[in-house]
Length: 196
Image (cartoon, rainbow, N blue to C red; front, side, top):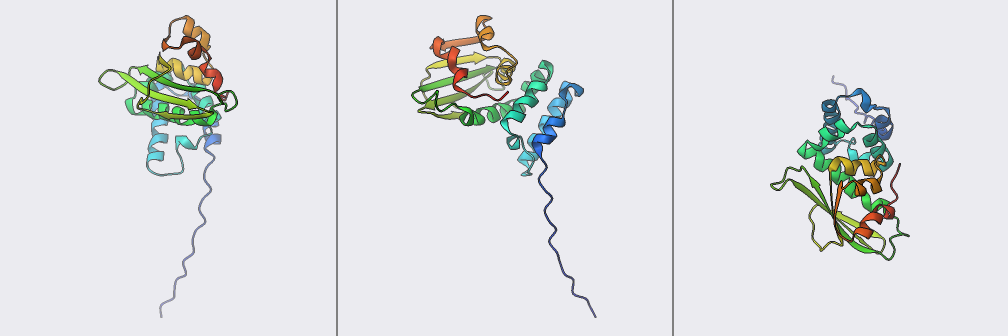
């Protein structure tokens, strides 16, 4: 006589706290290649549909993670064509959540961003930020006439986002090239509530 088996659903394991995991990582203990590998694995896990993905990190954690990385690690990350886009995409998607709606209530502006060293034929990665009436929309294909176009080294851009670099110093040193409304460009970061 055959016994009937009873199947039980196993409880799903809790989703790991990705923020806590990221906080435990000390990039200073990693070589630039290992740092790139780490970001690559996180991207691969996200692409595979797991619960582990960069977009699962709170913005504050993501920014702190990048801030703890050395310039050499960030340079290695930006030299990787796919991961470069992944990091830019993460940052630009998060912009809308960090626009200060009060400060930007009457603002209408289109900003074009250009990052040299990209994998495109002309070597430039382009993004667009549209701010209108307290809302921010971003994309990776410029579609509208810009109020300002900013050309900046991707490593310096990430350092601005993390608060490691003083924005006025970048302007004064010529590391940011501005085409269009220079006064607006100088105040642009003030419209965003950047986590530190």
